[in-house]
Image (tube, rainbow, N blue to C red):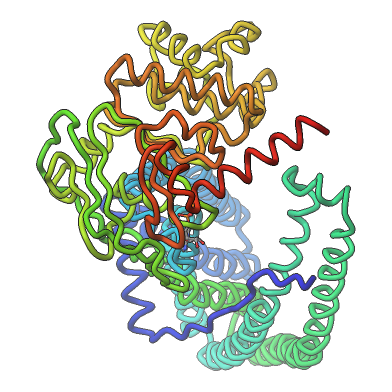
Amino acid sequence: MKFSPKSKEKKIRQKPGQILRNNWRMIRAVAKYIPQYPFLMILEGLIWGALNSASALFTIRLFNQLDDPKLQFGNIALTIGVMALFYLCAYIFDAWYWQYYNTTLFQKLQYNMQREMYEKALSVDLACYDDPEFYNDYVFAMDQARNKAWEVTENIGKIINRLIATAAVLGAMATISPAVAILLAVYAALNFILRNVSNKLSYKKTVEQKPMHRKNSYVNRQFHLADAAKELRISKVSTNLTSLYDDSVDEIVKSDIRYGKKLIWIDMAWSLLEVGGLMGILSLSLVQLVNGDIQMGGFAAAVTAMWNVSWTLSNLIERFQKFPEQSLYIEKYLKFLSWEPTIKSGDRIPDRFESLTFHNVSFAYPFGEQKTVLSNVNLTVRCGERIALVGYNGAGKTTLTKLLMRLYDPTEGEILYNGINIREFDLTAYRQKIGTVFQDFKIFAATIGENVMNGPYSDADRETVTKALQMATFGDKLNELPNGVDTQLTKEFCKEGVNLSGGESQKVAIARIFARKYELIVMDEPSSALDPMAEYQLNHSILDSANKDGRTVVFISHRLSTTRMADRIYMFANGSIIEEGSHDALMQLGGEYAEMFNLQAEKYRDKQTT
Ligand code: ADP
């Protein structure tokens, strides 16, 4: 067994114009939700840029006053006082802005962006989930967009801040000593180049190691998620996982060494520049101080300016380097938001159900192998009928129910509801006519009542829900639960939550179709997790109640004992209907259905005799 979680990394190069455009588009998106947000970020950048440069100006003034032969303590105290007040106000503003104002704005931004994405997610075609590229982008957008929106605006504010600070420090130095300012500018330029090279290398290393870290995190997940706990204990699969982990760590170490050898040199060059720069600026300012070209304040400012510029530049480079990465995120987010569903809603409202017809329907899933899964299917379901779809795994039965619900549209042919193509109906109104239980139904972390209503639940629904659960043969279990229909399902949000067994969950899912007045019911293997006795009771209950209410039922079942209750059976093989008729007719025909039925009956008999 070879473990290979997908680790293909696409190298995506973006043009500078594209990077700028994407970042700009994100700022506009942010402004759409909170108009003042980008403006505030820029304002904050301006204020802090000014504050950072003020430190150089204060230092010059203070040292010049100290150096003055007519030393006046009153003036020095005033300078220190103003400086203290200035910084106190700045820090109070900063605390208010970041701890309170920005946080609340950011929450609002997050909320609005996320809600828009939820709306979009609902309209996305189910086919998109089959497309790994789209799915990755989609998960990415849902996961990252809000943080990236904040990062982009924050980044721009900080870049403005750093640019102003650097320009102000260099400008202040130029007025004191043009020679020191030039030396500082040369130091700044070299510093910028070295940091840029070093950051680029580190980024390359991160990208190179990403697939290895993904392998690590895959192994990590298998060891801490409950899903894999059983398999890990009963098999030797942990050996494969740990060797995958060992290999990836080995690769990471090799990559660290390879990059480390280059990064050492850059770091050494940078240290030389730091020491050389400091010594150079110190010596030059000292000479100028001794010659009387500058005062003590100028000398002190030159030293602080160097540290100041060094830090500001390194931060500036880091922030500039975030732009391309942010641009990629933004592109995915905007692509997701601009995605147009191919399953379009019509505007007709469907009448009471009378018939459903598949007319020459063929279908291939749009992604993957794109092989024909259904070919030339013709079938009709009339009001009040009980129709069974049977066949071996992979024959196309579930796909047919997905087409029926318009989760996908047929590649060829048409599906008619009361003689009208289902594409003409309003999508929500059409889907609301049909109650469906899928094989891979979902139980949500909510109360039983909410799960059965599959939406909002109020006390007025209590009786409906209880009745629906009884029809789905969940009545006995419901009586055991102290909180009845108010019982919280799953332990996701509360310790007292109940985890139902597979069969019990299936019953809750089935109760959904009884809780609403669906005219057509579609069930895909409704009782696959039940034992034969429970299955028999449940199927009887479903079909009886459907009969009483005049509902129509289409069900897929792998247990052919159930299909005896059907008015008509369609036998599927390789995406086509190969036999159709009542149970007796198909048994008489002696074809594939009869063979499958006899095989199952034999197995059942064998089990009973052993
Ligand atoms: P059945 O319900 O009869 O077991 P399905 O309708 O689930 O069969 O599957 C029919 C065929 O379609 C199978 O070959 C299956 O692998 C393929 N299939 C099912 N879902 C998808 C999908 N989302 N993308 C591509 N192929 C799929």
